[in-house]
Amino acid sequence: MPKDVIGSDAAALKSRLLEVRRRSEDWARALSAEDLCVQTMPDVSPGKWHLAHVTWFWECFLLQEACSAYEEFDKRFNYLFNSYYEAIGARHARPERGFLTRPSIDEIYAYRAHVDGALVDWLDRASKAELDRFTPVLLTGFAHEEQHQELFLTDIKHVLSKQSFPESAFGGPRHRVSPVQPAAPNPNWVECAGGRVRTGHEGGEFAFDNESPAHDVLLTPFALADRPVTNAEFLAFIEDGGYRKPEHWLSDGWAAVCAQARNHPYYWRRGEEGWFEHTLHGLEPLDPAAPVCHVDYYEASAFADWTGYRLPDEREWEFAAKAYDAEAGRWAQPGGRLHPVSISGDGPLHALYGEVWEWTRSSYAPYPGFKAAAGAIGEYNGKFMCGQYVLRGGSAVSPARHLRATYRNFFPPDAQWQMTGLRLARDV
Image (cartoon, rainbow, N blue to C red; front, side, top):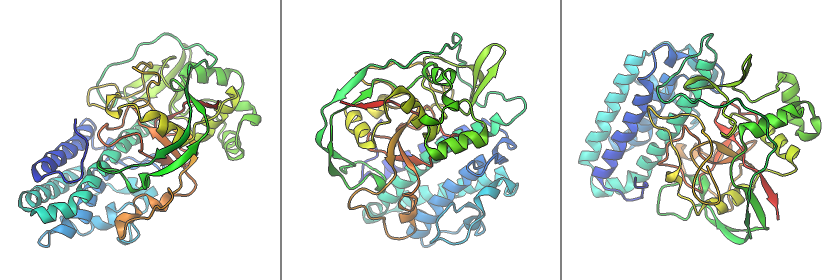
């Protein structure tokens, strides 16, 4: 599967557009209209809002800029489906997206068809100069919609976890495993000499602005665990009283644990027959050898402290991961497994991509020389560079196409609803 390269021709761009747009609807059509309307917390957006927002993005940032004759489907949608772009104008409050029973899901699909038709028509007619000008916007639009496909899945997982009788959201194999037993962390270590290394995106293929500019950094010798932390290992932390020992926790994390009476990862459930986990395939026995997921930064940091090791710096993670092909990971496919599985893989480092996003200890901050793009699209990443931590890799619900070693995901330290885990690091 080729990467998105700047300068693609019209036929390749159209094929890519139709592929991305179809995939969003493939996920949505597996669910009911009622499923797609619910918002279970402020960070979760209804499924139909995701479908409409990514369509609004195409309309706002490409069609209204590139097509003088384009007619908006409904001018009110600019208010309803703008996410956070202050330069665009006022918008519906994020915590109240679940109040929107109107427009209906059928109207949202009609909106998508209207915009898709206009996009295809523009691509069929665009001159080479127009394509050269707007290809960066197209590539951003592809990656943006893929990001929302992942959010769509993690958000609907949260919605379904609140049902009295949670069922499978999607088909795919059920996972049968042995009862989980706690196990002390015992990874193999992959040592890296460090030194002066290059980090960040060098250009050529598409990347987000927060991955650039590329620059040199000095890394002291370090080692990464050969795999992410497993459920069995995290259970050992629980059984040892990890959630009751403040000495392992950052202050804000300990306050959250106490206030919320936490004693296990977010989607874990304890039943008469042992530990289970809510997944997009329903409630399943906890797989002892699979990476632990849905732990926030505070839990990841506390676990690392308990082991006597630490979380990796994002530059360490990137340096070690550059030797591995992201697309060789296990990625989200309709009908496939949408949850981490027992760890396997080739090479010294396993499961870098396609199982869980891995927390790093790096605060999300601009690289030296970073400058946000002019206009509203410059609000995409730069405005969030405060109070968040960087994650690397990609999860079992990530699309493969837009991920790479330099990709910088980011979330606030208390985010649990994303498929987030950890890999240990140590100094050498």
